[in-house]
Image 1 (spheres, rainbow, N blue to C red):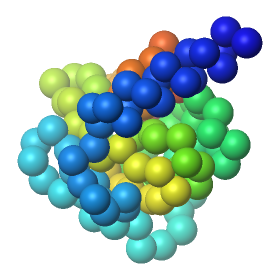
Image 2: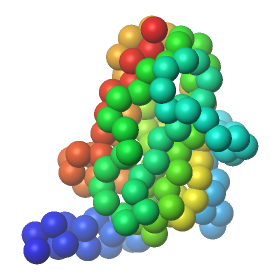
Image 3: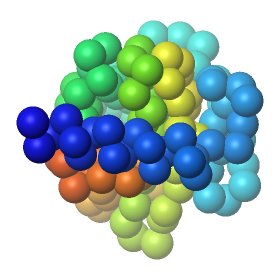
Image 4: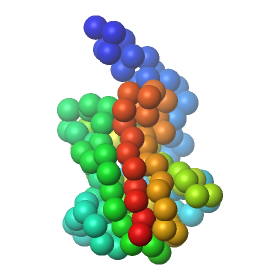
Length: 140
């Protein structure tokens, strides 16, 4: 019952102050650049290029992966949120802090130039990271 109350409170906060875009599939990041839309399916595993990340269709506060690995350089995270619960992706660490717009029932991509090291990725919607919607991105 407590989880339901937290989810309702988070949704109320999100609806009150989140999102300035009428396009559910639009994305941006803190640098002001607009991420490219998802154009192809990708793997969530190792090599460079695009990494796939998704939220569950049931609206749970989790990602389908808690670890991602990529080669240094331009790394794209293709995020799919098939639920009506708002989610986004933020990457932080080693002087980087970039995020997508919050999306519901949609997809968005975030491309960022990353050096070797460890980064955190998480959902920046209030309460989601604290509920466990986070992971580690290792760049080699």
